[in-house]
Image (spheres, rainbow, N blue to C red):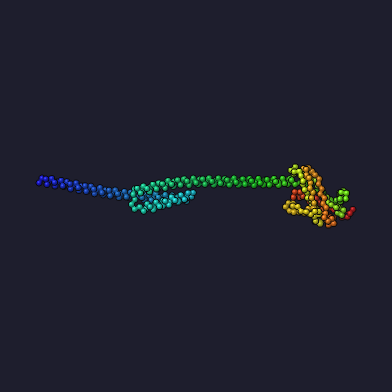
Length: 301
């Protein structure tokens, strides 16, 4: 009987202990459930934080695409990656700490990439500005050099023209008259057009230190009172125009004053030698260098 009482007591104790255990397990399970719920809430909050950070990064990259055009392709690629991550995070029904940690690493990498791209863009912009400045400076130097070259070219042309003009001989003491050349070769001056056989034009070639010694050719043009050119009637170019001349004379120039005479014989004395005033022009090196006039009278004596 005593044994049965003892067994009953032990059973009661065991039942009590089991009840306490079940209650403890229930409380522990309830507590764990509450902790799990709180953990999920924290994870959801962190998920929203990750999405917000990604959206902020997207805004940064949108702004960078407008401002940092030097590396726009890189920013565009990173922006596409951000948009893909945002969509991926939003699809996560039950987020875990490990997944969130992965996304946070992605965000950190994207931020680091953004900072590098900003620095790269600023560096490229500074380099471009330097190139623009150097290019502007180069263009300025080229413009100045061109202006200098043009000025030098103009001066050279002016100097060349001056030298060319200096090589032109301007005769002095120009005189023209009718003459009769006798069979003996003697030359007799005459003012009568019927007695004249030639027209003689004499002048003095001046000294010129610039002109080299050698052959120099002078041309004469004589126009009679009727406006006809008498003599050879060959043509030469003078100041860009062709003109008819009456005759020419080659002179051996030795850089000293020299008297020269040119004799002009008419093609048809009866038509070319008439009474009146004759105009005479001299030419050298394609330029008119002097002129004079004279008259022939009628009658024989």
